[in-house]
Length: 591
Image (cartoon, rainbow, N blue to C red; front, side):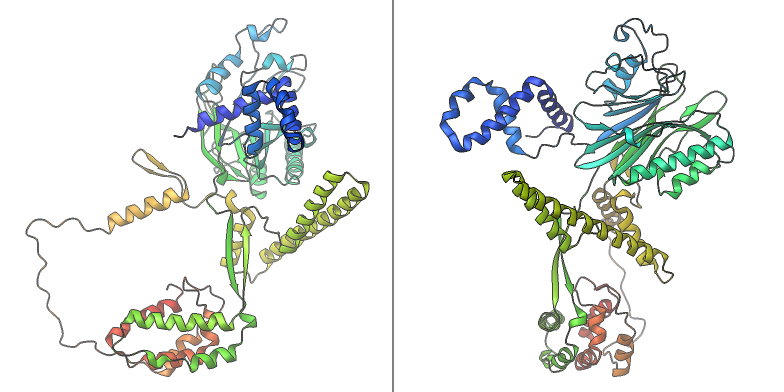
């Protein structure tokens, strides 16, 4: 029997709340110590264990021994609200929690009904004299705030208790209303920035603002996060993001700045709608659109005129943890011996009475034996978590570094610490060199005029990977939504299978009689050496092989011996056509 996602997250949140209390933290630390001592003293610790609260001990011990509890399993839902004064009509001389304010509507709509994990708020209009404890929302950490200190502006973010979030004031800039958080989700690092830009800037102020935004993006990118999200009210006043920006307050400067950094703006409809106009003011920008789902908006709260924009972070990855690959080293192959073996192979065993399937089986058997015997190969494992610049040598160095770190932790000897630090410095230097070499290679390939389309998209895939959206949008069939690649593929397969299936014939249906239009019949297929040689000579050795793993390079290097094979088979007549069709598909890489 399973549980749904809400129940699972509730259980995890309950565990986090349990371990956050001081008493339980002390208890858990004590149990860690007792667990280690139990290895040496065993039964002597039983009286001490009986003193501890039994349920708390069992719960914490099981979870600690488990070692794979994810503190915030995801997917995570986040939203943004322009509050335009969070505490309007509230007497700050009294407890805010005892008065009705916009916080109550936020809790009712965004917490109780929508259950957002992260709630970003701009235009809070708060000052430093308002304590964070007065702004508490049940189930959420105390808000992360950055106040303007005067009327207007201000940003604030609520994050649920069970989510690991760290404020990063080092990424903020003094003249821009922004608040950066570092959030850990499914072992991935997300940099979450909340912004507010006041309207009415001059052209010079807009230029300065764009420059400051570039600076903060540079600082965030240097953190090497898995995902960057920027959300907030930018007051650009455009009608649509991909439409005309000539009349918007920042013109094309902000739009071009986002695009130049390969970021994507996800909100595609106006977020502020009045009787006189509608504008797209509230934005969600990210470098990883493939990780965002369900980008939409909710109606404005209370008497506000800004819609609530929201989205879901969903790190979905269907790739296996390890991929085993096999590479044939054609440059080290003994082609002279291969051609000699193929030329003297027992092709005469193909008899006229053999079925075409038997002939194909024998043909492939001979080819595969020759490849295995005379072409060296290398097998390697590609790990899903590996960075693209990771090499076998670098992985070995990291392993040594980890072992040295473990030795020092056990012994705490100064000489082991010195050795650990030396190895750590070497590994850091090797990682920097590997990253630089990898990036330089990509840059050179992109700048190379001879780079073909296939190589270009291969580079783009390396740069973006799963961060980019797939080319096929979410498919809707009736009341069902197909969002993942597997669901889309199955939907396409079922659809085209239905299109290619004939309906059941009516009762009494029969096909009309078929008559030959000519007395001529195709009985024999003839070809000569020149025709076979010409076809195989035009093969592109750089093209990848099909599923049979017989590459174009092999076929072209063995041109003479392959021609001999085909000519030996040419005396076969109509039935052998199936073989030639299979062989021609092989030449096109479709076998």
